[in-house]
Image (cartoon, rainbow, N blue to C red; front, side):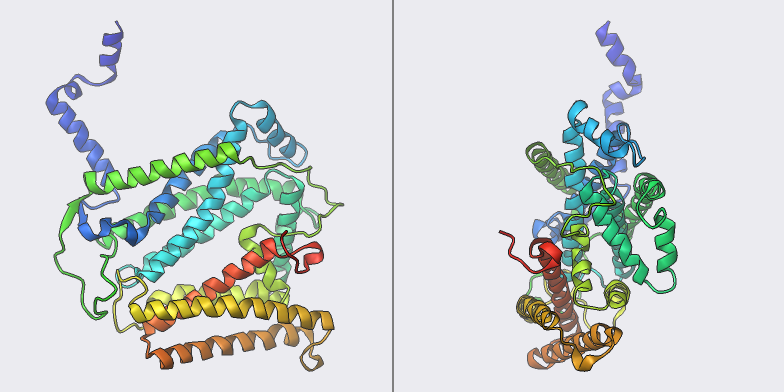
Length: 453
């Protein structure tokens, strides 16, 4: 009888040898839906991608699965939200593990996608025909940050409540629509039922749908571009075109086995992290008792750090808008050479990238210390109005410094546009990383500079 029950699961045609071949054919076609049948063998090298794109996709799947389970226990009201999370942790079998898994996957996804963006940029994988896929990737990064931010509030504890309070408070400095957005999100000027319902709906319905659609389109664009860029040695001439007919390898099993192995190792690592490191749940959110310091979520700590040094309108709106426009324009600049597949474009590009990272590591901490000293001394340039002293003046100084840096790199190293743009990009990325680290670990009471130990 058990044998009959087992046989009834699969059609008789699939139990034959020919049927098994057909089933393998179906599985193969499923695997190839977003992949070509063959890919250049050089793209299989782990050093080309470090598996970051596949890791991001794996983390998204884990987030969707764990988030679906959490929905069964969570109650999206200010009165019950904190208690429902507490009940999940203490009274639901494996509830703590699922919550830990969801938390760590969410935060790791931000880091992995940032590293993936750096990898794509530093291997020149944004040149034609992959230009628009860079834009799609930026859209994915934006949606992931939005999903993290909307989910941050849901536990409704003190940490989440005040982190989101700080972040939503930044909206009032956005010209024209900022006040309207803040009024739409908040309930009578503070976080309340409307805010939680809005964040819950965005986090569990709208953003996951947008994320899955963009991710599918992103993979499809990779396929239409005939796969990843082909890895080339750093000594390869930048004006040398990629080999027309490189040696190819089948996606199944060569690529599929590598992607599966990477995914399984990542899943094991994240499960181990979730089992060993619990995520604490603080006291319920209290509008009348703010912690000191009140910090934004770590992925917005760089913006919060900018607020300490620039006028709010510039820190929240002008500078992010300029950076966003710059990122969107990167693939469409007039490059004379295609450096796709060459890490850092060339040996010269590697040197200029190192110069950029070193310059940021020295200059940004010194500028933070200098601005803190001037603020403590109560001095401002010529007694100017705040919008000029903290807005236009430092912004123009930074723009002139970046322009000067661009000119120095181009003249000193005789660098190409690929190499100079890359150097400026790494300078800004390293600077933001330093601002984030400063905001997370080196700010104490009253957001004053302090050591983390």
